[in-house]
Length: 152
Image 1 (cartoon, helix red, strand yellow):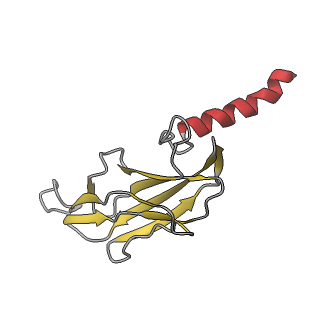
Image 2 (cartoon, rainbow, N blue to C red; image 1 turned 135 degrees about the vertical axis):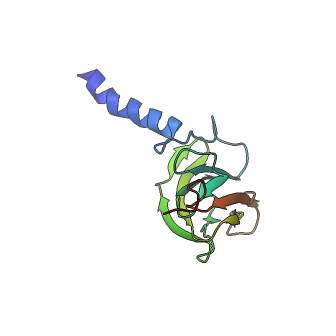
């Protein structure tokens, strides 16, 4: 009976460690900083996240760590002229001395062929003491007709 009660707890810890959406947890333990932000980009077809076709989904996973007592402003957005975007924000979870929250953006490029940029994302303390940002990410968008000889 005792083992049956431990199973949900163990599964919850494993899901938190591995990431519920297949992206591993970005830190093996809580960072020693007050605020940290990490970004992971992957194409919807399991590709490299740098080359996609028009309207193919690109998943941007943003992991935010904040010290427990730090209030943070974080609202990731992209240009609506470049991407059709949906956002899913997962609940915060305890991580050492702070809180960790994952935000997943699903982006579909609206322009191409050519290059688009996923912008840098910024999180900052509301009291102005600290700010972190990701790097911008270059995305090469190919035509859906590429490789098909231009035939429909």
